[in-house]
Length: 283
Image (cartoon, rainbow, N blue to C red; front, side):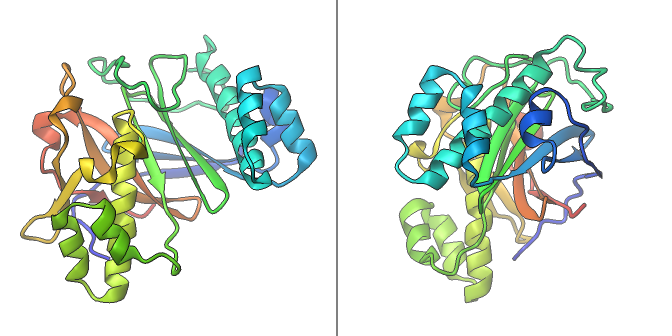
């Protein structure tokens, strides 16, 4: 796998959260937290291993809305139902915590947050989960039955983790889902490097889609990545229709959280973010 050389300034501190509210009843024994700082912007990550326990899932469903319970009931596979109910209950708990008036002093969330007052929650971030507290943004990813939420005091955030699978015909998928330039980059690599690059691009693209409040139905080819002369990946194209009047643009980072390779997209100015190499680091 080819890594960019730009510095991300990532700091990692990991603690087990104390039981409180919904976490005490449902999540406290296994909920994990990791706080990373990306170029002076802290992001709190919360990790939850999905548990296929009917009693736990029923308790999660009990705190959800009627619409969410109906959606859970419509899922055909039991594992999907467990995953949906537990993730939604955890999201609700995080939403309640961040919506509280004393979030800055809550012992669970104490952190030195650098706030950019020009980055406000924008109305076009509508197709991804959000928090009622407009000062914070949240993004979710689920992989290998492990749920990860990333929360930061920014206008928008996108995260994604993908576990490489030997069963996937990654070259066929790259030609079907990626741009011609990206699939050509993959084809030019030795097989294992090509596989790693495929999943790396998938993580970056999905994190970017989430940053813009979009879903996979928009198509992974909407965001186009290229390599510069130093073989560093950078975001080369975003649909002009996704333009933001406040000119928010994603800056991408890569790191490892809870043992998973993770792509993170955070806001920056267009002039700073355009063609900027992906920053990489290992905590």
